[in-house]
Length: 404
Image 1 (cartoon, rainbow, N blue to C red):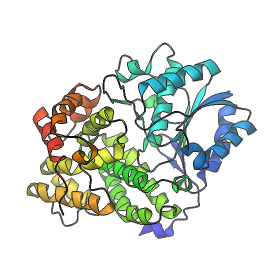
Image 2 (cartoon, rainbow, N blue to C red):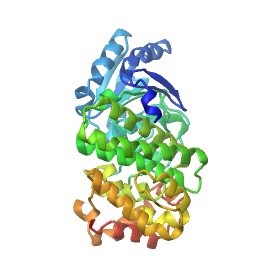
Image 3 (cartoon, one colour):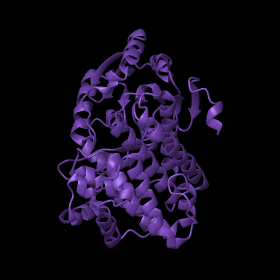
């Protein structure tokens, strides 16, 4: 019950690898960040964002003022879409280089921040392309400074070294992870998230749950990633229904945002496996698919698959959303059903068939899991050996409609 003792308007500095300003009103810290950038000789930046959220949330008012106050010139690449593409990254890099940008300020959820991270790398490797970056044709060791202003409570990208982009020509959606793309500063201000729609609220929070389920059960999971998982799921279970019923309440956003931050650190340590490896082909084939919805549709089948190998861990961390599990391997079906019920209860009962996928798509999706760069690394640390047969079964189980 420690939440009752917290003043959500006290702006706290949380130190992970990235310095995070966290709390209602944290966006005001952009003034201090701009001063620090200028003191380091950064007088031009590229601002990377989506088409509208950076303004609708009010974040841009603070950022523009801080840049102007500190004599920092800027251009704004405001074309990032959900499931960002390598082509868009290259376009942003071209504009940034022509302007002479020395740093990146990314404003948005996972898509703008991941795009910003990619741009930051390519500013230091101007002869390279985003496709080369995401097909691992080189290993970056440096990037331009990154400031992340987070507008969703799901991805955790503002506190970790991961980024994702889609190559539409190949239906590849790989992930990269490099120390050089930890943001120098991040801002997590829940007040900026009170305009998220109901679906965005649900899908981003479910993303955070998936992060920690995977980070706590991979073959490189640690007590740290498991501890973070327990608290992340507890907070999402408690505050997601509240936020869904009262979208503009900053207190509920505060705790969902904290859960997301923990989730981002959790999978930075424990990494990811099945759910993300199987979702990436879904949204690579259908870029309009929300990443969090894709994860939700896969999660019960993944739980069923991995539960026998990680029964004790899963019973413990899933208690707030799947109560009563004893942590014995024979509960896999029950665990999956309880998680499926929780998802339906919060408003996400969909399965893959509801989003246009069918049995005929399965072989293509399975093939993408094993041919998309980087996904083999995720599958390789799954707690149950990832064969094509296992992956196929997860996709097939995720087609079946939810029945109460």
